[in-house]
Structures are given as C-alpha cells and as structure tokens.
Image 1 (tube, rainbow, N blue to C red):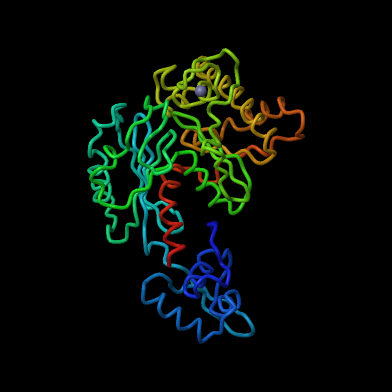
Image 2: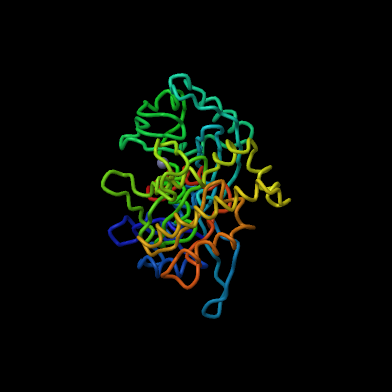
Length: 375
Ligand SMILES: [Zn+2]
C-alpha cells in the first residue's frame, strides 16, 4: 500500500473522493466503509460506483469479510486500468520501467545508451527506444498515461532545458532533441527528486532525506511526505557536500565531494569493471575491491552524518548502487555510529523501501499521481 498526497476533503467532487479514498485506503474497503469514510449515503455511493465500474476503474477485490453478522465484499481500484512509463537517463544507459497505478513494476529493461554531451545528436533516439520497449513488453498503448524522464542534473522550471548536469558533461542545453518524436505526454525531472517521491510513496507520509546513489549522487528532502525544493529548486543536491577537503576531483570541478567518493562512476572508472563484477570481487575478498568499497562506505558515513545533523530525520539510501549494499550495510552503520556524537544507534540510516529500479519508477509516478487526482 502506498501514499499519494491526495485531498480527501468534502470540497472534492464525490466521484473523485470515492476513487481517491479507495486508492488511499490501507485496509479492507467495503461499500459500507466507503460510504462512511466519504460521508455519503449508500444509494449515492451505489450510483457513483456504477459509473466507476463501467469506466473500468474499480473492481471487486475478491475478498469477503464478516461484519455485523453478514459477509460483505471488498472493493479495490483496477491497478492496470492505466499504466505509466519511467525512463532514467544516465551517461551509459537508459533504464525503462512500466508501472501500474499502484507503482508496481510491469516491465523493465536496461538499454545501452550513450547520451552525447551535444544533445542535438540525440535527435529522436528516445522515441524509437520507447516504441521498441512497448512492443517487446506487449504494453497497451491505449492505457499509457505518459512517459516520465529523469536526468541526473538540474532541469529548468519549464522543463525545456538541462541547466547543469556535470555527470553528463552538459551545461545548459535544450531538452527537445532528446524528447522529439515521443508520441506521448512527457515529463522531465531531476533523478533524485523523482526517486525521493517514489520512496515517500512506498513508505507513506514521512520526513526523510533521500540520497540517490547512481553515477551521480543527488537526492531529495521530504517533510511529512512533501518535497522541500528550496529557494532555487536545488535542495537535496547531496552529491556536492564536501566529505574530504582537497580530496578527489568531482565532476562539478571542485575537490572532495561526496559524489567523487561514493558514486558508481568511481567504481567503474577506477577499476574498469561493472557493479556486478565489483561486488562479486568484494564478496570474494579481493583486496583492492575491498579497499575501495570501505573507503566509499567511510565517506558515505561522513555525508550521512552531515545530513542527519542538519535535518534530524531518517536518511534513506536509494538509486541503483544501493541495490548492492545490503551485505555491507552493517559496516556502513558502524562507520555512521562512530562519527555521530548525538545518536546512540544508526537506525536512522535505511535502505530504500523500493529495492529495485526506484528512479525509473519514480519517473512514472508523476503521471500516476496526476491521473489518480483527475478521476
Ligand atoms: Zn562536486
């Protein structure tokens, strides 16, 4: 079950309120409980339910429960009444995921894709890859709400330009060469923002600092589930916190940033191996692999403690690099604890509740949120 920031007040039209209540309910929902929660009569509810059934948006959940001496049937939304696509763009790959309205993954592909720093050369490439993905995974275009695209960088408020993406070696470039020819609604946003929202969705309403560990490092600050963007939409750019003054050179041009120490790029560029091979090597106790991993964990712990000491909330690790960290998570927590004078344990550090493909799923979520709010 999951959380979207949905208005359930009486100012919302009744049909929408019924659908949103059903979507948001963490428990068994019957006609009786729905009428009570929406503060409407059973005949009024029946009229709107008929509409929603006919539109293919709700269904019987197949569950029955005994209440008040008789058995009542459960109701649910139809999760795949609509689908959304999310695409995470990195320097080396595209990660494509299709999700239903519950943000459950329906299909996933990782496609090699070298995004040229002169974006003009990317002309139309994405449109063909999307169509191929839809065909290969037999996804129903008539139910597709749109395509969310995440970029590891800063996006202009009107979504027309990448203003700064050091890991892609892009400084101020128009986005249209990338999205040209895509036959569906498109929404472009920062990768950390999108995956932070997906994390908040999975955990239900919660305050957290979300740290996205990919080829770059970004993130999001969520207060009671609501993103805090900052004065110039740069909040959560955790990758450029200094964790080693005068240390390794970062893609931003400075030295000692968290991103220079803890991104997937450090592994792939430093050792010339992919993440699978690297973590296999660490598990096999290859000394140079272990040395790099523990150096990364030490610096990650410094960054985590800096964030925690400012915000005093959970610090959640996501992004594709975090998918490999579970076996070394206790070691990370020991580093965190040894560097944190205010905390008796390191339980505030957590791995993502969306263990796989959080960034492309987060990209899809914006369309899901808009659709659920529009019914
Ligand atoms: Zn930096």
